Length: 128
Image 1 (cartoon, helix red, strand yellow):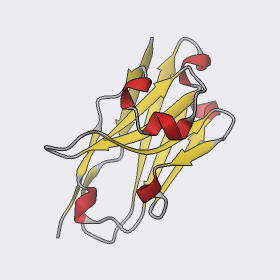
Image 2 (image 1 turned 90 degrees about the vertical axis):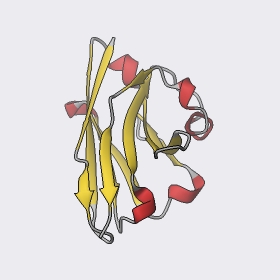
Image 3 (image 1 turned 135 degrees about the vertical axis):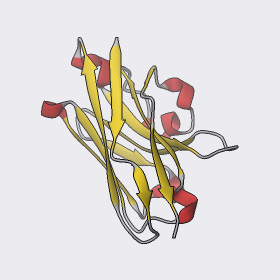
């Protein structure tokens, strides 16, 4: 079993930056070989942002390449997402996901159900 706990969200003004964190607690580090960030705005489908494996291989969704930076610290069992130049359309709940598989990260970002474990999410609200 894996527990994922996100933090770092909040209410911010446009143009600012945030760094989200996700701490993973697992009996085996193999359960978090692939990790990813998704977001979901009210009334919209869950959307993949970026994913990263424990060997450092990463992938971004096409429209997320410019302002999102994913990273992970395996020693701390922590996944990060830095978001720069936040825009009102970034308002959403941001979720951390993990899976023991090493399938294509790009494919996985388009298929949220491919991730077995999910956190409860952290809310990001961008408004002036």
